[in-house]
Image 1 (cartoon, rainbow, N blue to C red):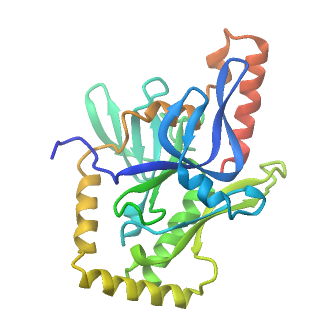
Image 2 (cartoon, rainbow, N blue to C red):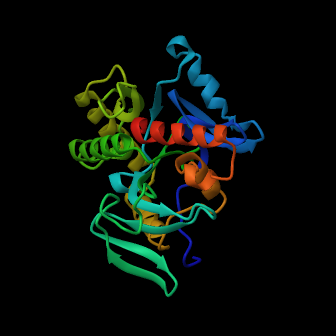
Length: 295
């Protein structure tokens, strides 16, 4: 295995609750009130929709996709959702510092150093909104590809906190059979004083509609027994995934880092001082919106 290369779950497509749009010659992230499932192909007009997006949208009320039936790939909650405080280089898109609120790994002129991590609000290195929580959730949609996943990326505290809690709870109540639980991603909304009563949309993970928790656990046990009888070793899969994630100091996809920075790190007004007043105004407006309505 190549050292320094994080081995992550195969990705078939992306799940997002927003998109990047062009305004006054600059590309800015725009929040949405529904899910979008895209392929890994990007054209000049944006990401190409995955066939599953149209398929699931047919049964969605008002054609708005706000629930997605999913299963987890791993029994271990932390393998399905990885989240850390991350500061990216805004030009290359590569992570410069990754921490958990206690310790961090930071790229310096003398190499990667292990340093204390006080979190984004107290860190001088990542102040000014440069350091954010960054979560990646891999889920399975459908049965066409046993090990293929769709990835949902977010810098929203609400989504990360909710998903982390749900995954750990479902892992616990199922007796460690998280990969067999029938679940669905659900888009929720709330408003706060900070958001100026503008709805904040975040992602939750719930039991598949129509099933109780007890029924979902019973189904998970039945499915786990059947899969084990067929010779599939889920524990070995989890172990292989843990080893793959730990094969590199930082987890990132070289081909997608520019898109990650574009979506989660829009230009700040100072960076556009040479632009027209309209561009600077749009950047300032977008900065306020992103601070208040990130899910």
